[in-house]
Length: 403
View 1: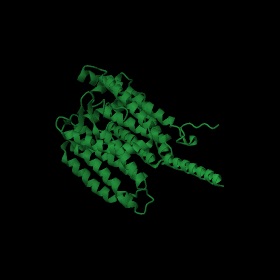
View 2: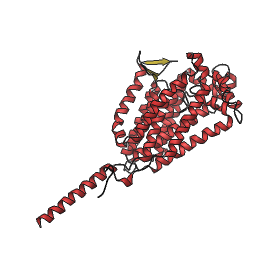
View 3: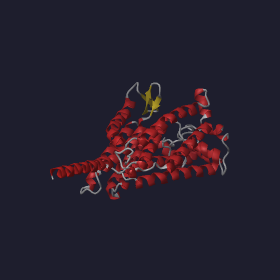
View 4: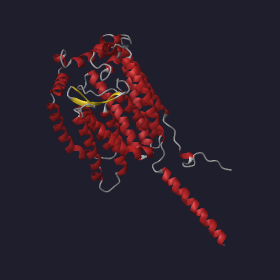
C-alpha cells in the first residue's frame, strides 16, 4: 500500500528554507538591539523620562515583525501574487493619507507619517519600498524578456516605478524616492534591460535631482555641509561632524558599550539615522568589520536564493528585497562616515522605528519564501498531469469493458 503526504505536490519537489540566510537575519537583529541599547538611553531619558523607552518600543515592534516575517515566509507564493493588487492599492492610499489634516503628521514641512491610534506613527514610504519590489517583480514575470518587443515590455514597469517615486516626492521625502528608483534600476538591469535604454532617463534625472535640491533650502544646506563640514560644524554640519568624531574615536577596539551612553547620545537622531555612529564608537574598527561581514554574508545568501529560485516572480522579488536592504545599509553607513550627504534613510534592523523594522523583516520573509518555494505553476502542471492520468486510466478500463 502506498502512502502520500500532502498529495497536491510531489514530495521530491520540496525545497528547504535557507537556514544560513535566517542566521544572518538573526545576527543583524541582535546587533541592532544591542546598538539601540547603547545609543538610546540618553534620548529616552531626555524625551520620555525612561532610559529604556526606545528598547521597549522596538521590542514590541520586533515581536510583531517576526510574526509577519514568519507568515510571509511560509504562505504560498501564489497567494502573495493574488494579494499584490490589494497591497498596491493600500500603499497608494497610505502614501496619500499624510497630506490630510488630522491623519498626517507634518514635521519641518514634510508629510511623511500618519498617526494610528493605539499604535503610534507609521511611515508609508517603508511599505512603498516593499510594494515597489513586488510590483516590478510581478511585471517582469508577466512580460518575459523573450518576447519580441522587449523595450515596450519594460515601459510599463518603468511608468509604475516613476509613479511610486512621485508619491514619495510629494511627501517631500526626496532621499527615499531617489533610493527607490536606484533599486528599481538594479532590478531592471538584473531582468535584462539594456543600459542604453536608461541613458535619456539618466540625463533627465540629473536635471531633476538638481531641480529638486534647489527647491528646498535645507537640501542645499546638506550638500554644502557635505562639501565643507568643518566650516559649518556648529550649524547644519554639526550632526555630520559629531558622527564622524564618534567613528574616529572608536579606534581599533572601541570605547566600550558604556562610552556611547555619554556624549555619543548627544548626537541628533543617534537612535535612528545615526545609530551606526554609536556602534562604531563602542566597538571600534573590529565592530565595524563584524557588521560589514554579516551584511555581506546576508547579501551573498540573498543573491544565491534569487539565482537558484525556480519561480521567476520569487527570484526577481528576492533579488529586489536583498538589494533594498543591502544598499540601504551601505548608504546609511556612508552618511554616518561622511562619505555621502545626509539622507534621512534609516539603518535596517538597527534604527529605532517600527515601520522600518516591520518591512525589513517582511522582505526577509519573502526571501526565505523564495528559498523554498516550488517551481512556477508547479501546482497547475502536477494537477493537469494527475487529471490526465486519471482520464487515461478511465478510458483504458472502458475499452477493456467493451472488449
